Amino acid sequence: GCALGSVAAACLCVAEPLSACLAALLAFRMAAERAEGSPWPASWKNAFLDALAALKPDELSEGMRSRTEGPLEFRKEAK
Image: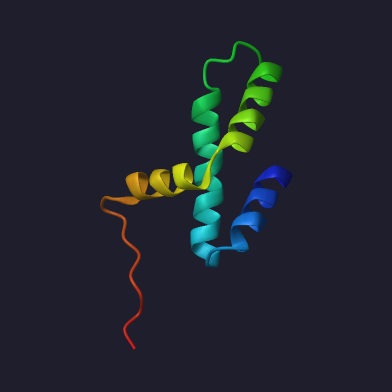
C-alpha cells in the first residue's frame, strides 16, 4: 500500500497518470522478480526493497516496452 503509493507518486511527477500507475506496478513486479529465491520472508522483503532501490529508469523503460507489446493496446479517442 504505502510503498506502492510512494512509487506511483514519484512516477506521477514525470508521466501521465495511467502510464505512471503502470510504471509503478511494473517497478514492483520487476523488483519482486529480482527478489525471488530469498529463503525467508524478511530476507525477501530486504531483497525486494534493495531491488526496487536499484532499479534504473532505463531498465523500467525497457521493461515497460517489452511487457506491453501484445493484444492490449491503449488508443486515444478520435476528436
